[in-house]
Image 1: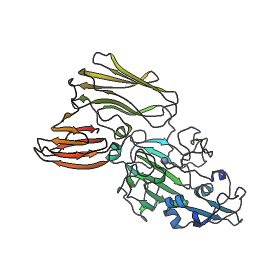
Image 2: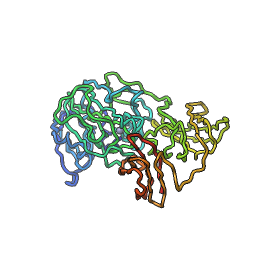
Image 3: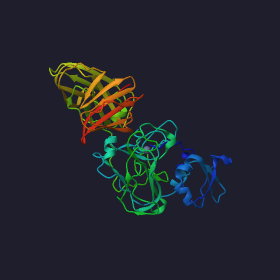
Image 4: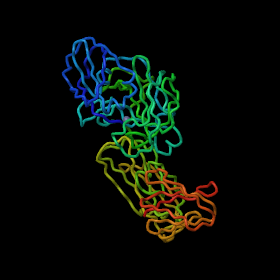
Length: 456
Ligand SMILES: [Zn+2]
């Protein structure tokens, strides 16, 4: 989800044969920006160097570009692609850049923003499925777990690989705009068109600079590197072209078969979990919890959906085995969203039996899930039996005793693996200093016995 304000959007609609000569100069060199350029109608010359193409992220961040035309008009801009885009009309057709099936394996959550006004948005259908300054199309997966299963970004058309970045951390859950594309591949096609495949998984890229690729060829795995908070592919067509055509977009149809514009509410996933009821955990797609054991302390119903709207009401009813409403929770939304998590959680009740959760949107039933509380016990927070491992809290220290050789894996609340600790049979004094909340996973003899949360 790369964002960038584009100072040259006012040039949209200008018509001229465009060939430009670019000279890159460091911004620190004192270049002027946004010089007068609204009247250009003549022929200019293009000389865009290979370096310019390859170092696109560097270019965007610290380099400005001069574009000289024969009319002596001077452009000095941060985002030259906008100008050039208006003057190319490539005829190549693009295939969808994700392996799998749209609407089943991946979803479009953000289109290109066609509204040139800062602070206002408009997608190609004059809708709101974008965000301010967004210059690509975002294809989202449903979870980090799906990301871990391996979903490939694939070449949208035949071409040649002109840029690869493959070494960056790929499990970001918060937007840091300074991080840009993260890991990405750029493919140059006929007629000067370049496609970018951004936010890929670390060390997943399967092509090298100079490789020729065909439509559908695997480039790398979708991840969450760079400016990204969920696993998704940011697909961008340079030079600043939206491959979609519609009432508020360009006249060029570039998809081989343009996907339909979806705006109806769609539930992508929903389940019951005993993992911590926080967004970072839900993004991991926590395992289903149909049986609630004595080690569990909370129960969360969570949902992931597309196209919730401003003033939508979402509600959850927690029903006891006797069908009484134990707890209900409702929220009224105050904005539109194309990709939305929502959840409700309860502390584990002391009523054994089969419970039901009903999830409603605007009073219509969306989903029903159930779980069984095996037995009602009071939870002793000083000592929890976790599948063969006894966790004892001593301030910020956990001591673990196991009957078999086991491995204790520790993850932070963003799902990052912190460390693994071998637990020998019969050991009693494995000490683990933790000052932060953590998720613990205990595996014995190749089988994961338990996952639990530790809160210091
Ligand atoms: Zn994006």
